[in-house]
Length: 287
Image (cartoon, rainbow, N blue to C red; front, side, top):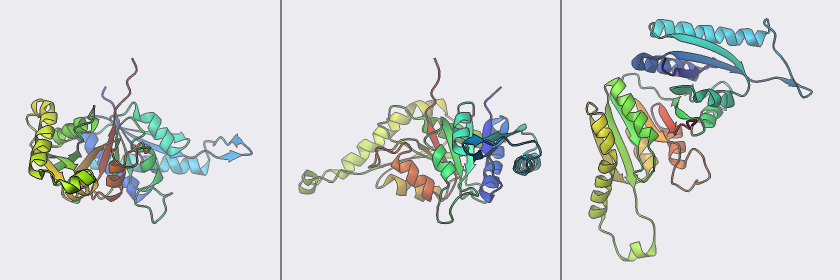
């Protein structure tokens, strides 16, 4: 049996959007959908409080799960759905489940978020930390655009985000736009001796095309556009997101935030993209 798509719910509007996105993706991929609700633990005097079967909070969690499952049954009736009520810290629980999932899907902000935040703590706690794809659903377009956007850094050793982007494009019958933004380092030498920008741009274009060659052969039915441009990668990806159904990025960046697990580019795209964002981290397979 294929791995399920896991979606987290908490009763928020963002969670409902995540459920609908996950159900749609499960239908396309032909996999099951697991809906998870996590209740934070209650501690009294250092002791964990065990909730009874008639505990109001537990009943509310079960109600949220039942409503989400009913929504999926109405929206995508052929998708096999299971629900699970768990206890713990939400981001930790979903990270632990990611290893057995095709993807983990969450809303951009849950009930516990502050009004001024663009992205909730659960999304940030998952993206770049959980194995495999984590999709943060924000700004879902009302009409399908028929295009997936994926960022690439050709110097990276592995490209799980490109794998996922091609899989999504093939499953959706969508176009795929690969974006690579480059710029020159700010140095005194570059200031004194202007570089040949046209030569550099052509070299960058060839490098990206050569790097994509294995995927182009593996997915001949996917229409691919290679957008290689000079500029800021966050700005480039967010601009293209306005006409996309999904933006796919890797989990590590090469900007100034070297200590950030998620990477500065992915972090910026998560906050400012106009459509759902998939952050894809390599899976760690046990030998």
